[in-house]
Image 1 (tube, one colour):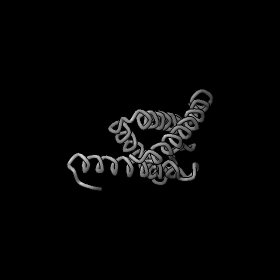
Image 2 (cartoon, helix red, strand yellow):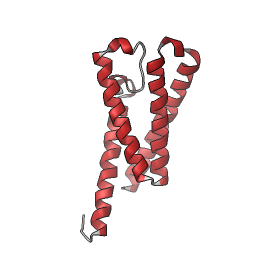
Image 3 (cartoon, one colour):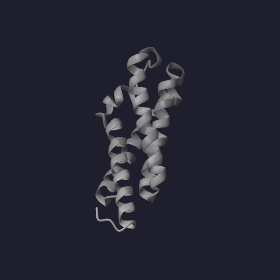
Image 4 (tube, helix red, strand yellow):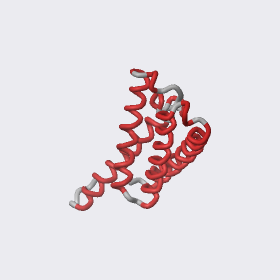
Length: 133
């Protein structure tokens, strides 16, 4: 993986993870009974962001790839369900509206991470086979 892209992804995942962890900890401790599903989703997103940040830092590509995939599925699912079944979401999550409250970073981030992770894996395989990329 490109070292600059990796560092940028680590920073963005870390910042988003801290933001989601802070938000969800307040929601879970003070308002959980008001909207348990959205607040639990925010907590889950925080865990995923932190796991992916650590995986990228430690160069655990498989964990980063799996985490980014789960994240993208989560963002797309929550974003879509927010429009289909809006009564399930009495309050916003990090992934509501495909992450619109966070400047759509939650939907763009896993796509970007997956791009660089898959591209890096292909380049590595090509180098192993002696193919120039």
